[in-house]
Length: 260
Ligand code: SF4
Ligand code: SF4
Image (tube, rainbow, N blue to C red):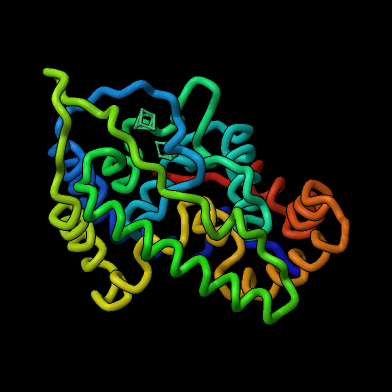
């Protein structure tokens, strides 16, 4: 396997530059800024997995990573790879950005994180049903290929939370569809709209960051063999180290020089 020429592939690089050129990251910031200021108990239970993201949010996460010191970037990329390859057999995991001190990208956390605890029960129940349906569909597909997906992975709930409050201590409600439509509009500057809607929220930010390092097609060829080997008893840590070394990602991160 030959390693990537840079931390992310050249197709993404072009999209990244386009997003930068037309000010999409600033526009995304303006959508985020329109959320009401809220408080909660900061228990981090809602960070039980990495959030699904729009494409512009994926690029934003790449931008954040590229600005981090190499060791930090490596740590997060390793977590992203673990999520990318093994999330379907690993029920006990958390968002790749969750640290003991809280969210590592709090100021730029994606839309899905901001919507937690502030959408109507109807919207929340619908999102949960859709997420479970998509998970069950993927689990069935994987099981046909010999991968046993634990039930706990499929039923990982979108936990509800009633502890989000505004500055006066009142419950907060945000129109999730309107906010999502604004971010989808930003994606539409880079992708055909049908792709935007198809892609949204199925792949987590961790999976996307991991895939960015290899290219989606390479990942497709790697995932099943790795899952099979993990279910045959090899440790995820050993398998990830093998992937990391073979792709030369350590060298890429060490030598990468970016002009941003
Ligand atoms: S939104 Fe709720 S679950 Fe998430 S950190 Fe705040 S209190 Fe905890
Ligand atoms: S990005 Fe931050 S707020 Fe969102 S799930 Fe991850 S740790 Fe939690």
